[in-house]
Image (cartoon, rainbow, N blue to C red; front, side, top):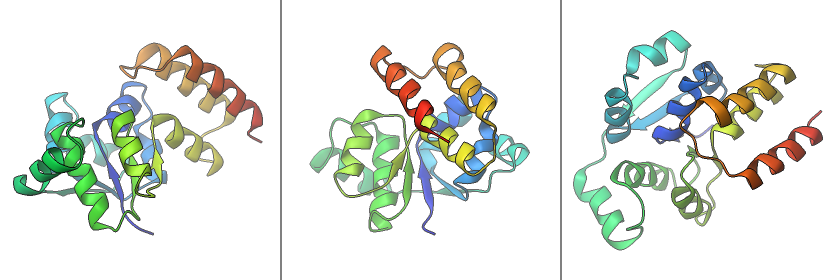
Length: 167
């Protein structure tokens, strides 16, 4: 299985709701060095991943590479997201990308990459029987109410339909 490359969002949001352990369903996780720096600035370092049982690798991306992406491919994304793009591109777009950022999601999906956000990781954990239906529903509710993730009302309605379709 190709690596999973994550930006800051899903890691931060899942930690905010006490569900960092669901990342084990997508592990091992590769973080670009700028993503790790953003997480560490929020008090979420390597030790937190270790406590959650999530295998983690940090991969530096040379500044010339991510700056070229910002200049020539995707000026609308942030430097850490450009590093995510660089690592996924190095996998020939075969790596699973974790992001809650819509601009990065669209960019990666445009290259055929499979992308999952915080909600997708929770659903993945549920289908892998890592969490129960009640835990899934409570975690998604917590994403709306207790995390820094911004989700629209329309997305909330969509999620209720999606949850209704899950076994």
